[in-house]
Image 1 (cartoon, rainbow, N blue to C red):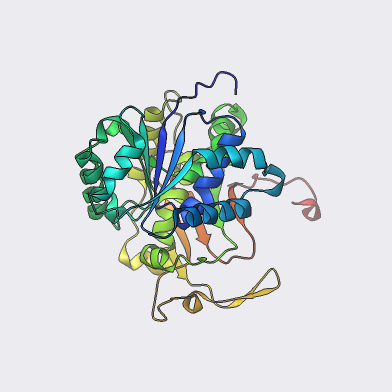
Image 2 (image 1 turned 90 degrees about the vertical axis):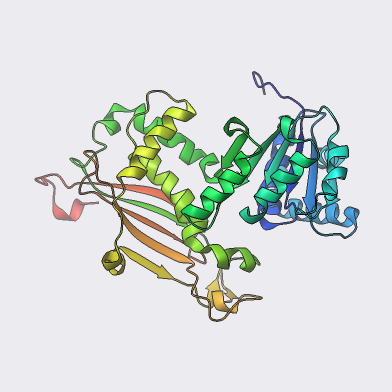
Length: 364
């Protein structure tokens, strides 16, 4: 693309055989290669604990890539080019000796991007071992959510990473913000005075933010049952959408300015007390039924499931923001798996006019 400066690097994906990497990361890298946005010398290292044949692991990545990349976008020439830059290495993330081979693969000069598509519990070990083999100085790290189990464990994870990497080389990713609709939200609000002048409690009665998924957990029981829909979706994706919808205009479009306005929204959120749970929070699990006419199992019937699990797969929350702009305006956040349709939407409900002059039958 014109105007884009593309530099070579080595991208190391830790957890390369997991659902995140196979479903999201490799297809995204394919599309970048397809658009010519990867330098010809950029290499991709697929790192996972599986000690099997590396050739077979790469064949498995190709199989999943063909499944998730739209047929209209598949190009054998692009895959051949991508396959040429792709390598696999079996690695125990906690074993320092395994990182020696990685350091040799990376070389002495290539910048490294370490993408942590693993549980946050091993972030510290990965950082410590990267430092042990001398890779920290030219490495940037990308961390996937959820970063920790709660506030305290999140601090532990972030502090462990900060021992080896300064903040300007740490990127905490929320891939949901890459959606075109989400990226257009700031322009929709702040470039249109028609909206921004009425974007407050004087004109808006309530807001609905919904992210529904048709799929179940799809073999991710080990991860999902520990996280649940609250940690998997609400504390990152939905809160990001809430902040983008509710924040005041930033001073400019820099990352710091936008972050500062988001933080103000989070600080203004009204805490939900124990006696309010029944009226402000709904949790649920999907049961067996049909999806697209095919029978599907319930959450407790998924492979390797714990039939006593109380982990939520559906969450609905009423959130209230205590500030001048949004006082008295409820925000309804909803997200769930195995829903009737896949849907991501933000619905702004404006207040009814004080006097409706049209016939009731013509009301929308």
